[in-house]
Image 1 (cartoon, one colour):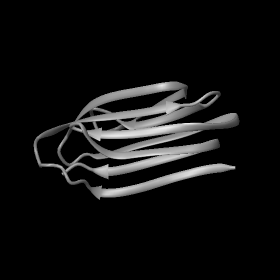
Image 2 (image 1 turned 90 degrees about the vertical axis):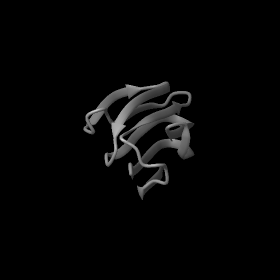
Image 3 (image 1 turned 90 degrees about the horizontal axis):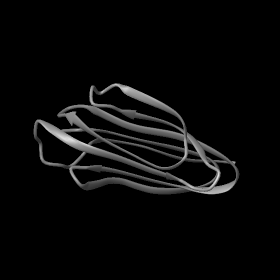
Image 4 (image 1 turned 45 degrees about the horizontal axis):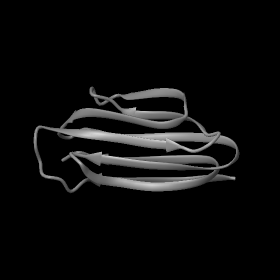
Length: 111
């Protein structure tokens, strides 16, 4: 069974400025291996394969950038994935999934 969470928020509610510090965090429980894709400093998607355990990436993104974090994790037994995205220290998304296949996607636009 695959557990899904997908949300597109549109523009987020943070003060408008030239650039923002975006912090992606994901923690993949026992046995989970994930493919991770995120918006990097140039605003393009960067993909990582076979990520496990705790993963964190901090990037500086310009105003108006479309930000997305997408992960697909699998395990042989039921496990837990925890996800968090912060912009300038403010939590934009925080979610926990559990199962053998975890599919998390979260997207938003910086003001």
